[in-house]
Length: 124
Length: 348
Image (cartoon, rainbow over all chains, first blue to last red; front, side, top):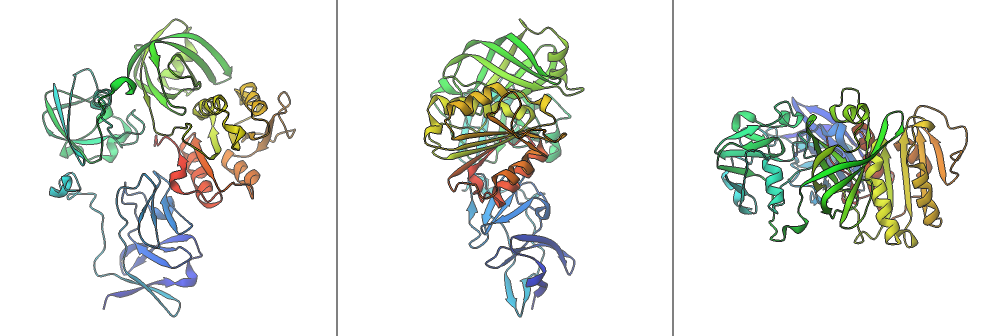
């Protein structure tokens, strides 16, 4: 099993996020009021550190750098600026503990396999 | 030279020129290329050169730090074609056949220049041919005396106008602002490219306005207020302007702002926030229509707007990056605005 303990639900107040390390994997844990999300700690746009640039309000996570935003209930992209989906780990809450299903660290493709090289560049 | 674009919304082509950036040549051809600052900082106009050669104009442009130059990535605003080129641009775009309203170069002459405070100067330009722009837009200004272009928001608003007004804050070592302050610039010729920018205001916006700005960021807000006055916007909507400067003596356009408050008949509130001194009075000593507050402008906004945010609000921000960042946090958390109800030019 790869369910890993991330934090206690009481560790993160509503509408706040924390950067945490889970067995060597950096994650951002977010309490959006109706639940928790666990994700890579950077914005998929330009790798802004979301523990600094991320704002959680009304269940929306917004990166203040360029206003990319996602609804944390559905992971739908919000606003007119957002161009990429947010990647997250599966989460569950049991007995006041937040667990995330982490097998491999989720990374955004900023480096070699970015969209400029991708054969699917024109497909959408 | 033929420039071909491979984009997420298909292929486009335009004529390139060795003396013109890819960005400006493409925009002038009616293609909605992605950009924000148009002056080398933000990294939004990145593209990858797939075929051909590109010449970089400003090699030290901060936006290059966000690119993979070894893979042929360029900033379209800081690169020009050296041959026929094929560029990949990872965005959706459109091309318009009607190029009457697209941005282009115009010649201009400085008709007036007036220092407003110890480090702020206002100047007016007469254009070689009229321009139509939206309130909140900017142009990139170049002069033969200073290398590179500077982005300045228009202060005025008028349809199809031959006159543009700008305001510039003096930056020590800032090439263009030092040039403006050190020379008798009236009569000097410039050229400018525009209009540019998406943080605009117009009749389609049917909301209350909250504007938070610092220093010369007031320029675009003045244009928005002028536009709003021209269409009687504040008969139906409320407006709040928070304008941050260091001291009372650093305030400018105070009379103009007081006139806007008068004209709006109680629906527009303007507050001057002083970061470096405690205001001695609650209102401006010469213009009682203008309220005074202490502290950084986003802090003053937070204090004075608490419990007063309307639920139908559009936010406009303009100023130095730390101010914009603080104001975005305020608008998202305290004003509870959705991200697409916040408008600003992303120069950083």
